[in-house]
Length: 184
Image (cartoon, rainbow, N blue to C red; front, side):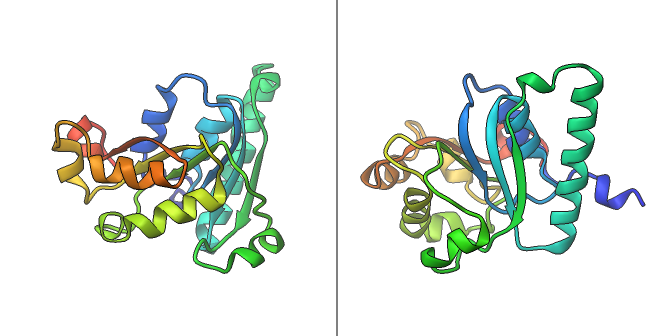
């Protein structure tokens, strides 16, 4: 049964693993198998790993257990943050979030493989969602394989930066993994 152990998208996880100081409370939206969550946890963040897909939730839980077991064997668990895997539909009403286990504010919001093309089309909607999940100064990390015009733009996408800034968020980066040499 290899499928649940396969990693679906690695680009954002690799990118986050190269970032300094990823601590505090983090939420990963649409976490899939949870690789990004494992990286954030290993870096010391207390992570809420979310998805709506049953197979993804099972895979995230298994991968979290394997990561914790490995850290325990290596006597490194003390360096890790915590990780909670739960079902969360980010399009649900904010009033229902607490019942789903999502308790803002978060210091880090991550979303890998956002619905292709949807990020650019719904930039303001996502910015409001991330603000509701975060607070002023929350760091947002997004991978969008359909967002090439942003990654190729010099300077970086001013519209995205300003839209997020208007919500009090710091858009750390938005990128197409292929443009960075990262395979999704």
